[in-house]
Amino acid sequence: MGGAAERWAELQEGRAVPPEILAQAPVSPWVHDPQDFTAPDVPSDTPSRDAGLALLGDAGSVLDVGCGGGDAAFALVGPVTEVTGADQQQDMLDLFAVGARAREIPFRTVLGRWPDVAPDAGSADVVTCHHVLHNVVDLPPFVAALTAAARRGVVVEMMTEHPMAWLDPLWVRFHDLHRPPSATTEDAAAVLRELGVEPEVTRWERIRRPPHDPAWVARRLCLPDARAEEVEAALAEVPPRTRTAATLVWRP
Ligand SMILES: C[S@@+](CC[C@H](N)C(=O)[O-])C[C@H]1O[C@@H](n2cnc3c(N)ncnc32)[C@H](O)[C@@H]1O
Image: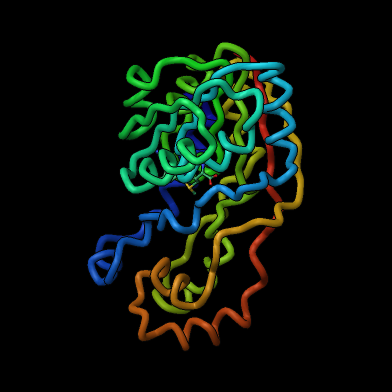
């Protein structure tokens, strides 16, 4: 493993929740609620959408890795001829299927962890992967499989720092847990460069974001809903989460 990949893995491992805290969690802090990832009827106009449309041209297929409700793939409606959604959560794939049917796009779903399921997912003209990299520890095989699956190009979207990094002061406050700084887009780009890939990186301000009400934050912190009021008070003292996203584009 190269130095950049090692740094990425170390920073990501540093964000793990210790087992004794996890054992007290009423619900898993990691599992996403599909309702928060429904793709909008009218796609947001973003640099990721622009990049996907440019790669697709008049027509082409899309593979959406960590698809959730298909926000990345369905933003490309028009030139998309068929979509494959890959995700480790079946409830996300169910939502993806509903979205594909509503848009009358031929689709396929693949359940499992990327890159393990890459052979089942096959290849596509364009591979999208939005808001997944900050979940990954071992980044080289993950991004190498994205590249291998793409005939024309890969579009990755990510927040410039871990989307939960703004809660780090609350981990100290509620659990006395001190975390390392977040891995950043620059760290991800360095891993790509180590693999011989030079991504085009565009930073921008993201308007649409999943909710973060106090009960939601309490669950992320492995606390019961009953402590939501305490969390709400603590949130008032925390700097707001970053809105800066980045689009990374590369060709195989
Ligand atoms: C934050 S959501 C983003 C969903 C969607 N791409 C979007 O931008 O709205 C991350 C999604 O990636 C999935 N996921 C995370 N790691 C994964 C992996 N290694 N393989 C497959 N799916 C993964 C999660 O289940 C979840 O649906």
